[in-house]
Length: 346
Image (cartoon, rainbow, N blue to C red; front, side, top):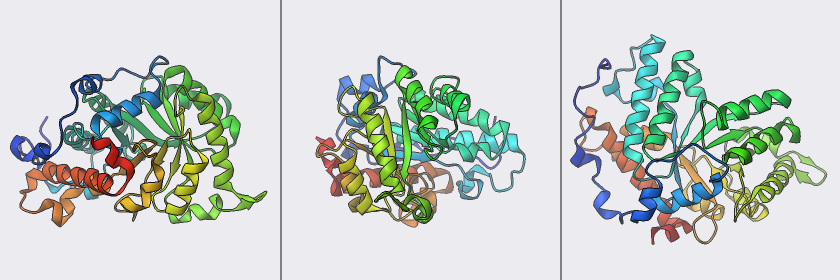
């Protein structure tokens, strides 16, 4: 069904969509085959191992956030004047699918921000299901960013729905501040289903210091949480890393360095790169020497690259996907140039 304001032809010609492809080494055939059509998470294929394989295949630890916001979408999509939730949800889904089409050959994983879809109601959740299915069809892992957290049977329901049930995401972000018993249902489901969780430890927002930096028994709250996360990661590790990861913001480079050392079995999800102020040099400490151990997240800098003059130069309004392509390549290049992710380039 046509979207108002959107041209019927492809968002950009194929020859402009892959303008950087010739400069990037080809993905080895055996890794490309392994990443073309991922199945839903299963215990036989743990998330930590699947993530490592995906990062090696794409040769980058870049994670693209899918945060559709009406006011930021490319003008060519015609979202500005849309108030009908169904029509807006359709535009959100189409936008995210188009972004996925660009980044799928380049990165291992995408991170839909659930709040952006929840904000427009039931139609938004239908759009989210469409986006997740499209990402999986393109060989991408999917990290659902919902920061869920609760106790008892409610936590079990969240875990069952997002990591095993109809959503079947590969991983989910989890809020730990209800205590250990609020995390365990997620860990149990993640282990059983071969999924992963990322627990909030030191988040990228300035206000994280209000509670996370408070000192108790000689340690900050985030250090206490990090200790628990590392114990869970070590417990669930079938190899180097476990099913339990940590969220640590790029905006806190010193803490990021310290937390990498304190959590050797833990994948780090690092938001805040780009628009929020995190630089490639700030995230160096998140990695092992071989470029593994961390996922670096960028959303607005990539998906809304049409609003960046240096990325949109020379493009027509309907070619906004080319700006996404340029921005994604820029992110990959910056990480390869200034972090241990260079080891992934081979």
